[in-house]
Image (cartoon, rainbow, N blue to C red; front, side, top):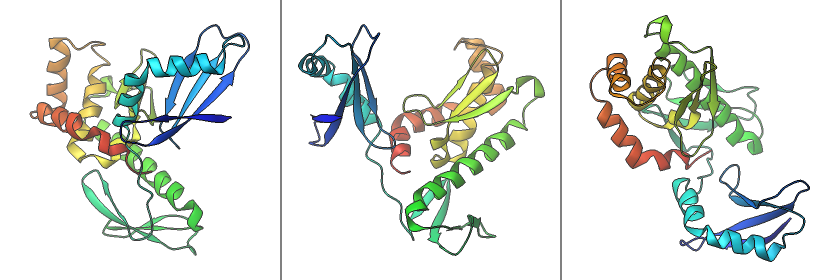
Length: 232
């Protein structure tokens, strides 16, 4: 149940949901940015709501930082334009279509279904096409670098990760970044299949896979990464 609001420095009021759980010993905070912005607090039975809010206030700087990294999303509508890996795509709602259809020149995405499904269908298209692009990039490297499995995530602070089990994960929001930025993140994670660290040997492998210019792509992400969370 939402009983409180947390006011950000921008003046935005974020709802706070407090849940009491059995077997929980500590208060835990979970700021959520998607699909809506909310702060979830779990607390033990013997801890009051007042104490939970006081704990939230003690973590104010951290909570502020989380939401600043993930700005409010823009609601996409018919006629809007999105950037997909450096290419501009105009969104056109066609309710009579049963599925999405991309124009032959790739400049227009015809989005089928009811209006209330518009955002979801655009998201489904972006994620599916982004996964295809990632796989295409991976086909350019030796097979010894390839992961066992590729997963898409919607993370705020990490653009990619590589587990020891062979699963490689990517934030699908890289779809809104330039193509070379996406390719850099892919090569970065592929290099982790050989070096699970950021040693000089690791960076040498990244440069071997990607080529020159990785500093430029890293700088772009640092300066523009937050904007990739603004829609969908």
